[in-house]
Image (cartoon, rainbow, N blue to C red; front, side, top):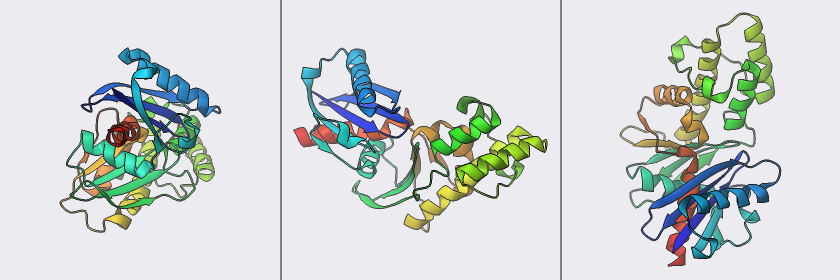
Length: 261
C-alpha cells in the first residue's frame, strides 16, 4: 500500500507519495492560488500519475499546513512543526536544528536525540523574511526569484535596509535602485536582513548552537543567497536536503504510514 502527505501552504500545495518501505515514489509542488481544493486535487493527481498508482491503492493521507482541514478524505491532520521534523530526519538524520522558511512563515525547530520536537519558535504574523517577502522584493527589483538567488555575495558587500516590513522594504528597495545602488548590494542586504531575523528565531530555541547540526527546509532553502547569508550569520554549515520545499509533505506521508499500520 501507499501513503500520501499533503502540505497546503499559502503559496504552494506540496504532495509526496511513499510506499510501505518509506521510499519516495513521487512528489509535486503546485501553486495554491485562491482555490486550495483545486490545488490539492492537482497535486494529488500529479503524484499518482507520476508513480502509476491508483487512488484506491493509497491507504492513508495525512495533511498539514494552513489548508490541512481542506483535505476531505484524510486520516489525520498534523502540525507543520511535527511534519517538518519527521521529514527532515528522513533526509538528513543528523539534524538537531531545522530552519524552515516557507511562503508565509519562518520556523526554527529543535530536535532531541530521540527525534522528537524539543522546542520551536515561529515568526510573528508579519510575512517579513518569508518567501512572500522575497517575491515582493523580486518584483521591486524587476527580476525573478531564480535570478535573485544567483546573488550570493558576502554579507559585508551588502547595503543596510532600515525595515523588514514588506511594504516599507519594497519602497526602500525602489529608492535604492533610484539612487543607483548596485543590485547585488541590495539583494545581499535583503539576504542579510532575512538571516538576522532568522538567527533571532534560532537563538530563542538554542542560545548556544555550538556543535549542533543545522538543516534548512522550505522553498527559500533553494535560494543560495539566503542560505549563504544565514550560514555566515550562524557561523555554521547548513545542510539542504533534496527537494527542500517538500519536506513537510514528506513528513506527513511518513506519519500517515506510521499511523495506518
